[in-house]
Structures are given as structure tokens and as C-alpha cells.
Amino acid sequence: MRSWTKTLAILLASISLGVIGQAQQPQVVYDNSTTYLGDFYAPSSLGEFGDQVKLSDAFASPTVTEFKFDYFLSHGANGNETADLKFYSNDGPNVFGGTTPPVTPAPGTLLYDSGVFPIAAGFNTFTASGLSLNVPQDFTWSVTFGGVEGTEQVGLLFYNPPTVGSSFDDFWDKSSGQWELKDFAGSPVANFGARVTAVPEPSTIQFAFMAGLAWCGWLAYRRRSSHS
Image (cartoon, rainbow, N blue to C red):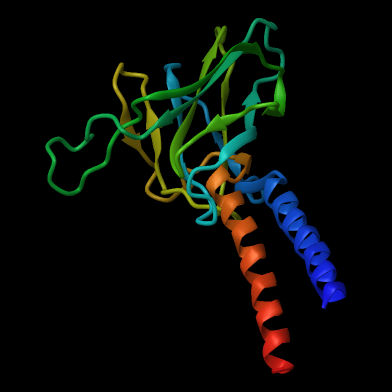
């Protein structure tokens, strides 16, 4: 009996640590970086614009550890071009007015601001790593480009469909001083290339631990039942 108890304790510890360790590993919770649509959005009047995304349903309130997005800057740029990446909760005013459906809240509470960073000419990917940001399952990421002069072009690349998570066929634009929803009537689908990596919220890890405990307890019960 003592041998079985000891074996169960070792098994319980191994499984619980394994479940927690796996749950704590960063995972891709949104990915729209697979299918490039061969085009990009370069607004004629530079302002702030970006995409509202919904993360995988398996992550209700994850901690983002890394974020990537794709952009294009025309060749021959003068070298002083910059970008600023931000995340927002979608808890702003309803863009359609009032409180009756359809209710579409604009980006509101600022969750993250990378600060201004330099960008390079050509097709590139910017990676914000080492993050520890708690975000809702549905949020908006945006970019503000600067230092673009003359005939230079800068913009975000179109990708679709997302392979993890989802996004509507539209994007947020603040070039006029307030947030507006825009699209291109499906040609191209207005989804920008981005990839989000995160770890589960603590409650998710705790649930995984409890699941490990419950499973081991069930094994012990089944063992005892078979010998009764």
C-alpha cells in the first residue's frame, strides 16, 4: 500500500509540473502572417491606423510576450522614418452613435505604447519582444508612421486569412482626428499582417494544475475500485 501511495505521489507531482510547464510556454494566440495578398495600405495622409484582432478562444485574457507586424517603406527613403506601435482596448465611443445595435466601440484605453523607433526601407517585420502585457481577447493594435516626405510611401501589408484567431474585414483609422472604420469592400480584405505570442493568464495555469490533480485522483479511485 505504501509503495502504491509513493508511486501515486511521484506520478501526481510529475504530471502537475508537466501540465503547468506546458501551460506556461509562450504560444501563438493570433497569426495573420501566412498568406500575403500582394498589396499594402499606404495612406496619403499619415496618421494612426491599425487592425482590431480577436485572439484564439483558448486564451481569454493572456499575457502578451511578443508582437510582430509587417510593413513596407519605399526604397530610397531618406533614413529618418519612424514608427510607433500601440495597443488599445476597444472600449471607446460607439462609432455608429448611441447604445442600440450595432454597437462598435472604437479604440479607447491605451494598453501599450512602444515609443518611436526607426524603420528600414523595403518589406520588413518589426518585432516587439520581452513584453509582459495583459490584454483582452479582443483588442486593436495600431501604428503611427513619421518622417515620411515627398514621394516616399510607407504602410502595412495585407494578409488573409488568419490561421490563429480572427479579424473583421475592416481597419481603424485616426487620420481625421477621431477613429473611423474603413474597408475596401473585400478587395483586398482589410487585414494587416501581425503575429501575437502570449502565455495563459494565471487562472488558466491553475486550472491546468487542478485538472492534473483530478486526473490522478480518478486513477487512484479506479485502482481502489478494481481491488474491492
